Image (cartoon, rainbow, N blue to C red):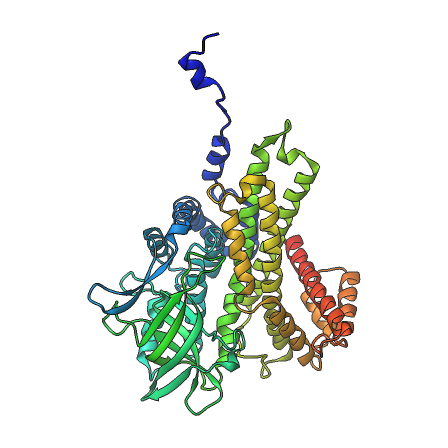
Length: 535
């Protein structure tokens, strides 16, 4: 038998193609094709729904297609940010070098004016939830940090420092079409989340200050302005400052600080996180002196934690969408993946978690918008009891959402990856491995799980004299069955008598485990109520 050249070309050829799946995925409109997201918006936006709905229909194609393409390209390992410490003339410039795709994405995302007073709150919320579906993408954390910086400046205006008003306008409304980016630098090597252990020194210089010392985890290293915590010389209390990145009129001369290096992280790799050394940086004080921890936690970190919950909902929505698309496309052993009971169960579990988490995020944000001045430096004591209780509910729900959504988010992304089997871990095939690493990093940012579990426990203990645990449960779980409320109220009351925060022993470790499980199940009950209210 003679083998022709044509036989050689045909023999062994595999005609299998992924084109159908790729076309369907590429043509998805993340808002228009998500009836659940539209239903949630309709419930909470009320009379503004039609206007916001139309705006989102115009907005969504950009994030679903162009911005997604930019994000995927910028996420390649060879595109990771790096430092250029000196220019060709031996000037120390500490330029953070990022790929062109990130610069373009950042310009377009911030150019939307998401924090402008002209944009309705629910429009901004859903736009951010869509943007978070990109993963970190070099823009999600900058957006989050900018929200906190704006809120801080709005909460504590200071006419004696006109520069602060200009910074507020630059970040919120933009100046000549340019929107500035904010950051928050609080962590030091010796303290981590222990902000009272800060040793960065703020030396008075007229009405302003000069900073000296080191900050160890500085995400959004390329930001225009940063919120920095430091101790004023001669005091032992932390204060809060706004620090411009550049000297006036200069864009390559740092404001009295150096960036020692960019960290190599497992996730949020597109986001430059640096180590900063301050050598007399000009800093503007903001908020009451000596109250920096309460100000930073009550305002800046609260908003960051709130945004992390929104981001986790977005991560899950994308994971669910893409896993369902693949389950409906891929055929193995003669049947589609979705037609196997175990796979169908996994897809249903992912979708339920995504919808429950998104519903909870909407419900918490609705409470945030409805309360008057919800960002408080500590638990408020000068408000009417009912308002104090609602403010406390919001405080604890933000903490619960942060720890529960990030924990479940990692599980959901892992399950979604498993639907793709071997292709699920191929980074050029799917965005899910990248987003999985992002959600793991989000678990650690703004307080790791055990720290926040401790904070929640101590908060509830601290207010028990005016806000009994049973009443707290009843208010948070309003709409649940009496049996559910009674069960959680009994569990919480009992746990508050256990040595959850005591010395290490078998009893205290067992109590700590029970507390951990209680917080997860309690918050899931809250999310379930939110989901049922939508349905």
